Image 1 (cartoon, rainbow, N blue to C red):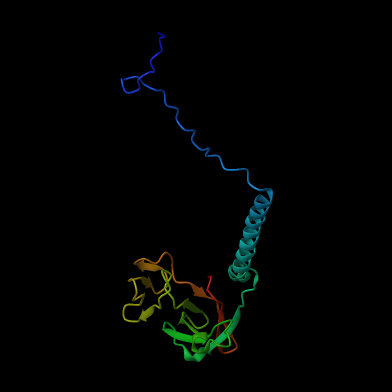
Image 2 (cartoon, helix red, strand yellow):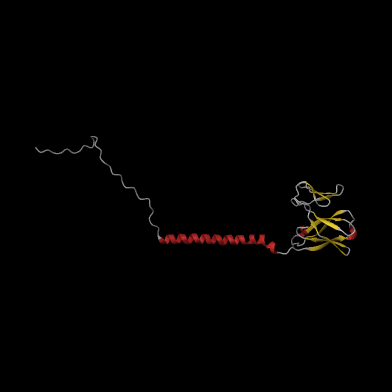
Length: 192
């Protein structure tokens, strides 16, 4: 009798080596050069159009901010009354037309100042707006003070700060007497 070799019994505890299936590669296939060129073109076109749009929107803004710096500030003298209309030692409100009224400004082209006759020949004019936030100040003749109703700013009769938040004295206008007329040099913001 011939001996035959028994087949290995897989159920009897022998382990059969299993081979794991190969996992698919996660590497993307090489991109098509035409697709890369198209993407590059579209990216550059988007950046270019964004830059053009930014300039188109930003140019008027820059012009709005920068244009007034190169424009000459109009300074003209406006007549506010006759010398005889003002008593020595009295402070009164005077009104005059702004230096650069716009055609559509209407009543807002009017501005004002507090004018005091110091002596027979000298006048002083203070801006009507508080140095803190621009609220109109009022003159209290009994107290001889300028008062700001918005935040409690108080000024002495010479325009210097008496109390409150104003950072500096009331701005002053240049005043001159031409013949028998009192004139104030009107400017957007009095600087003296």
